[in-house]
Structures are given as C-alpha cells and as structure tokens.
Length: 120
Length: 241
Image (cartoon, rainbow over all chains, first blue to last red; front, top):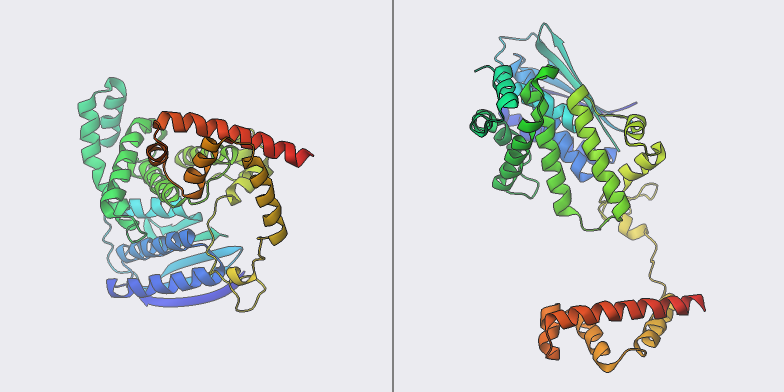
C-alpha cells in the first residue's frame, strides 16, 4: 500500500468543494475511471458529514493506492456534542452501496472513522 | 404506525393506499439520494423520477422480518437504479447480447446479495449463485467500461491513449473490402442498388428512402431485409473462395 496524500480539514461546508476537488485529482492519479472518481467524491463528502454530525470539528483524510484507491477518514481532536440527523443512515448506506470494503468505525454509536476502497 | 408494523400490514393486505402512505413517508430518501448524483450530466428532476420509481419497486421487495431498516435496504436499491440509468444513457458501444444479459444478471444478484448481507458479493460468490465460471464473471465486469482517449497511457511518459493506440485502419484491407462490396453490389438489381445508396450511402431513414423511391416504407423495409441477406450470402461465399 502506497500513501498518496493526507489532509487534515476543518469540517465546514466552505471546504467541502476543496476536498472534493482534491479527491478528484487523487482518483485520477490512482487511475480510477470517471464514474468511480465521482462515486469516490460522494463517499468522501458523506463520510465527512458523518464525522461532522458525530461532533468532530476536524477530520483527517488519508488516500493510499492499493490496486485502486483506499480512503480512510477519521475525526481529529476531541469530539463535541453529537447532532445526528436521519440522513446519516442514508449516508452510511450510500457509502456501502458505492464503495468496496466500506467500514464505519463507531464508539458507542458515535462515528469515529470511515474507510472504503475503489478498485480499478 | 411504526415502520415494521406499516410494512407488515401492507405485506398482509396489499392495500395500495397503504403502499402510497409508505411511499410518501420515504419519498425524502429518493430526493436525498438524487441530489447526491447531480452534476453528472443528468437533471435533478430526472434523477428524482428514477429514484422514486426505485423506491416504489423497493417497497414491494422489502422484507421487514429480516431486521434491516427500510432506509438501509432502499439506499443501495435506489443507488443501483440511478447508476444503471447513467450507464444506459452513456452506453455508446453496444455490448454483445450474451455479455449484456450476464451483466444484468450480475447486477441483479449483486443488489439482492447486498440487500440481504449488507456487503457486495465476491466474484466467487456470484459464480456459485449464477452457475457461471468465475473467470466469466471477472471478464464480464471488465466489459463495457468507457475509457477516455485523453487518459494517460501507462508506461508511456506524458502520452495519451489516443497518441499510443495503433492505427487499425489498414489501407490494403480497406481496398480489399471495397472490392468485395462492389462485387456483391453488382449482383443486385437497379432498385436494390438505389436502396443501398440511399439507406447506407446517404444514411436516410426508411421513410425518406421510400419517399425518394416512390414506394411505401413497408416495401423498403422488406426489400432492405432481402438485400442484406443477399449481400451477406455473397460476401460469405467470397470469403470462402
């Protein structure tokens, strides 16, 4: 597994587009086709939303190449108050439907991290 | 009414009013998911329509006794339908029928497996369930992917696929093909040759061709079938000789 890029982002809507753009660039470098790149961008956005609703203010996003692209996202720092929304279930299910090996790490129901893979 | 109770009652009665109530209750899921796919060249309204239809189909397929929440069950179903819609819209190259049929079977099996287990099946599991060799499943998964010619060619520093793909247009082969077609056309009647020129030279529709030839569209259709059979036979004979 080769590390490609690691980002620490503040979880605000103003940075989502930047993260999506960076994800698109990494997907292209990893050789993913357009459809998978778009799916990967959706999964990254949904994961960040899950972490935001879990009370995190920052998240770490790690991209590695592994016969495609593996993405691991985790909350950074102390988590504040949770404010889950009904759409969180849809977000988690959507990641499961679009990506391979999707895994949501939780502690007592609170999301701590999400990881998934997109094969070539 | 609680989710389980609502679905159990619908399952028991098949009451359309109840199904509509369920659809209205969960229509927001179709909207939420449709929005995630905006920006890929399809309008939100179209995506919402595809998602809503998938929701309706999903209501009939959902089995509340399996312990899954409806939102967890329906999300992959709606996502699958939207992705199929994208694929069908963008399919420029038609796949051979056998390959296309296997793709549909794999897609259906994958959705059912995902709904039942919460994960995607492996090639081996698909192979066992569909009774198709694992190799075929893998080969099938590779078929139909559209690749941009501008994409970077592997191992070719800085060059695109377009720049490194060999030219398949063999001039000698082209001349040979033209000779064969010319010879096959000489076996056709004057009217048949006119039809070929209009339909395949000028690319006119059957209706347009019929107008120009002063005959009915039905007549053109029948004549075209006959001409194609004749040409096929002549070319086949030519290749055998």
